Figure 1 (tube, helix red, strand yellow):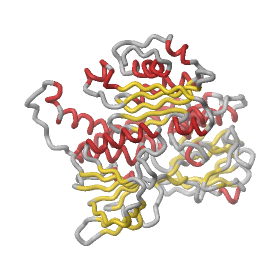
Figure 2 (cartoon, helix red, strand yellow):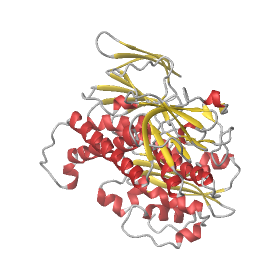
Figure 3 (cartoon, helix red, strand yellow):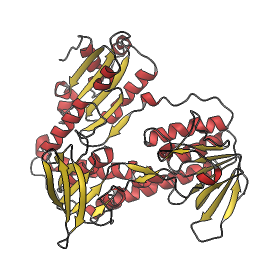
Figure 4 (cartoon, one colour):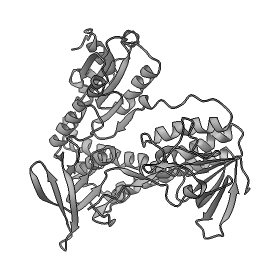
Length: 467
């Protein structure tokens, strides 16, 4: 392999490999350095394997409710957790091989190594196979090293009874009880997964409601559905200490408005936030500015030192794979001499794969009011949807928020079947500046879940037919 390139990317997650591919498409001689598996956390330990686990949980739930679909007498085996985990690992490996194919297709050199940046547009790499370190150089160096599970005070992870998300994806024995600390997407999804397979789950959330970044109505509906499924939620609650016991459980001390309480669980999952991987990268030696644990960049992801760039979880902004991929394209195109449109951080969709799914984009109702908008709000419950009824998935709703002055969509919030697929319509509508009337003149197919979006828009303007 060469030592001199036009672009060197450190980290091969969705941000890193996307930047490498786009750079290669623009004619840049490109190398990528990855210390673990191609695809990063998302493909190997996050987005993809969790969805594989959740699909198994969904199918298992369907089997247990076969009688609801007039399929009486269906025999339901006990869940085989090792087999379910192995399926998810196999899918992750397939996806990683897919990234390897993309690297070969685009003639990108791949180095399996750790890396640190050096002054003078150089990168030192230490191969993972034990070979001697070497230096690479390029006029453009892009850092995309991602993030890891945050270690919380009083909650020391031992990888066995107090675990992070990685261990949660590979447990070989189904715990009888689990306490999940944090109710964002990661915590909520894993709480749903283990609950669906039979574990008694309690979710502890420091903020006043679960899924705290979502619209308040969505959070309340999600908590109601969790409660219906047997998942206990303790909001406004802080974990003070967790102590493994000689009996093989974990004793957890929490504090809330009711005072201090003692909880016990077989496994405690820490799922409250992430921490950027910026240690030992050589940032200080190069002089790259860091603030609050993140690399400081401009709208084209240039750091404080010319020729050095950063994207993804190591920079401020939503720590989401699709955000990193979008930033990657902007950075690569800027490096390639184009003038790309910067990422619009006000129009980033979020997705949580519990059942029913949760997805949103734009302002919540509370935030829109705080910003001084006069609103038109429409809401369509899936109990009024023929498709949802036929599918046995009538929980949840679509909620849309419009600016009364301009009739433009400020935010959309969905909890329901296929919510994560439906939200793209709202993203495109906001990106295109479409008005409510333009959305209402777009004919939606029937019967579909997507009609719920149309009906919610109609409800905001007093034109709903099926409400």
